[in-house]
Image 1 (spheres, rainbow, N blue to C red):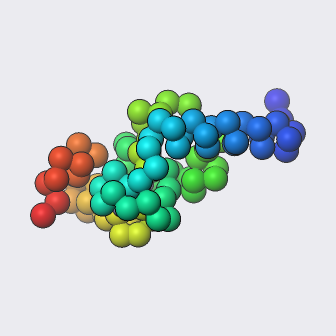
Image 2: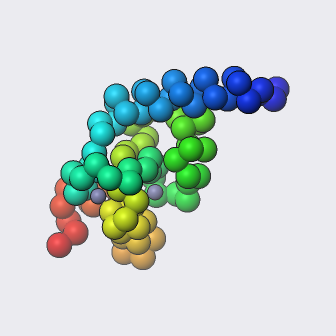
Length: 94
Ligand SMILES: [Zn+2]
Ligand SMILES: [Zn+2]
């Protein structure tokens, strides 16, 4: 079933509101609130925030981080250092 753009827009708006409410409004790593994006905690490549918001169903699978440097850093740690989300959030990054 194809969504109409109007339907998509209402889902997007609803999910955006929910994301901000449930994920807070600052980066979970550095606590700043600029350039925030929605990151999928499992470390798999994920769509940009606008697209992610259309599929945002389980808030606990996502976290807000700032685009740079934290998001870049999180993916770097996961991809090259084999760390998982908990390692990173628990401050294992020196
Ligand atoms: Zn940050
Ligand atoms: Zn990410």
